[in-house]
Image (cartoon, rainbow, N blue to C red; front, side):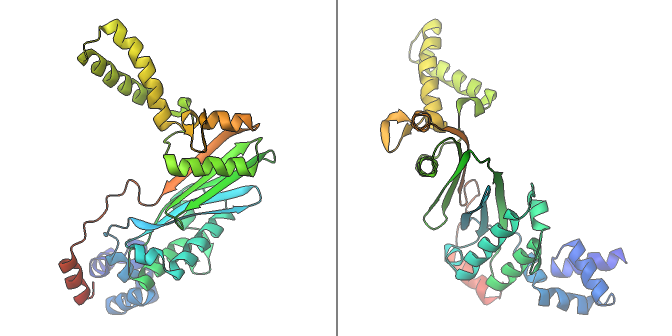
Length: 290
């Protein structure tokens, strides 16, 4: 295969190297035919959208017996997120992953499906819907027979929470999910917080106490109380339970004979820099067929 032909086709179409290689193989190294082939497959159209920001979309959870998957797929606008095709697509992807034991996005996108692979499915959806579609993240979880999954999906998929609780009911597990959806804990328990983050927080709190005029030895004692407040803000087990603020979430689960094994919370678009829409530019782009 001529590398210069592949490079030329990549420059024309914006498609990936392997897609260009396949297009040339399928079309006898004819650049024009290969370009049309990529357009027909929706690959060139999808590649043009690859640089766009996709911060909307949906998250979902699918459970089957002792396995569950939580995932997030992004698109560019909330309008597309509400589209029935997009919703079917995200459920198809979730169910495909649920039947596997993949660990990474790369492994997941290589899974076979009716469209070829999940990566092909993403590409086809980008071409069909006309927006960048981005498979962002997933977590596959397996439970033991003495454990329960809790699930909660808020606002049709804007927030999804999956919990794994040992020794308590599904209702308790769901309560934990609903709390996590509302209170946004970053970690399950104190031990999960990285030591460097705790030390950084302590340093800030000590400096604050000293700036308030407290002697260094007193500042150290004050910090111990304030660091507990810090844990209550970011650790699920330390937070006051939203349904009963007389107990923490950890205590609530323990009172019901349970133990929190893990909680995974996905909020659509978190951590993604949102695009700043310019209506005039958007209209101009549409008129150019971009």
